[in-house]
Amino acid sequence: MITPVLPTYARAPLSFVEGSGPWLVTETGERYLDLGAGIAVNALGHAHPRLVAALEAQGRRLWHTSNLYRVPQQESLAELLVANTFADTVFFTNSGTEAAECAVKMARKCFHAKEQPERVEILCFEGSFHGRSSAGIAAAGSAKMTEGFGPLLPGFRHLPWGAHEALEAAIGPTTAAIMIEPIQGEGGIKPLPEACLKGLRALCDQHGILLILDEVQCGMGRTGRLFAHEWAGVTPDIMPVAKGIGGGFPLGACLATENAARGMTLGTHGSTYGGNPLACAVGLAVIETMLEPAFLPRVRAAAGRFRQGLEGLVAAHPAVFDHVRGDGLMLGLVCRAPVADVIAKGYDARVILVPAAENTARILPPLNLSDAEIDEALVRLDQAATALVTARGAA
Image 1: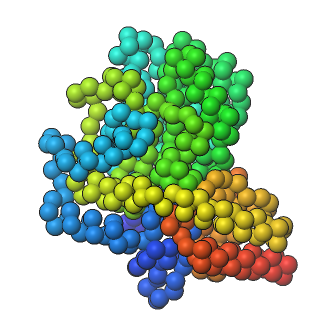
Image 2: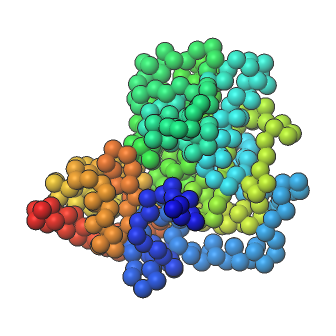
Image 3: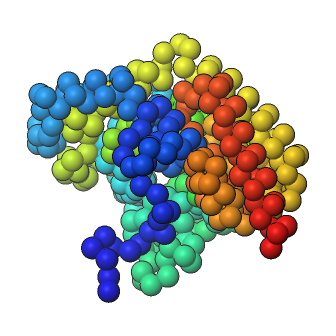
């Protein structure tokens, strides 16, 4: 018999009733160190006082009006994003999936407005993840997400990760854009080298097509810059973001240049909830916190400490871990033992990790993790690895 909640998730046997900073608490009072942050969502941890205050203040005044009217909080958040990024304009959504969907529509509509309606194809990459809408699964193209949902939305071509010659050969008269994550998240925490990002920008400029950088997971301070592409010194034309932008409140955005957004005129896109007063009040508090002078340098320092500790953990447990990859506080422990076993032993040690492809355990903690909390995380990860080695030896 089917459950009241549609059974589409393989849920861990855990439930939490309270959270504070990087800590989650169960009904029975057990405290877990959360290195998943709701899959990179709780960028400032659980129940951050500034976000709680913003939510309470706005919640007592006005929650929702729809986009039939001006939304001052939305305008303020858009202005702040435009002032601190490449973008000239922003469309607000409720999720990363919706932001990626907007990016696809925007790219195609741009060329329609340029009187090049044949340019509809989006070039994507194996191992990518762009959400679970029809366009999102068509862009990713992986069998586990597309099987049984055909026919797939046309207009997407998938290329091997890092296949530069194949990419250049794929660009033709119907190409509208290249869509890629600067760091693959679901794909196993795989960073795109800075030289490749620069090459993609040059290739798009050369052929007059658009560059879509999906920063839903790797953006919002996660790499120690506000957005991951900043490390390469390049800018996209369109960028979907979400997760950390709301700090736990459902919020996403599609950022774009004026040129890329030229086709998105009155009535071409919309959202009932997207960018409502409540969501944007929280988003403003998140962005304002991240733009404080000490915030991103602290993320970079924390990332260095955590990375060094993880490298030591790999060296100490070669039967469990293979290597560390990623950037900033978007890190992956590539495992030799089954990643499901690593995560299960993590639960026993009261530390939370997130699984990904290529037998990788994702480490996506709150960005304001303290040194003491990093050290505690490393102790608990060591305990989990030791317990796994012991259990495998006994077996």
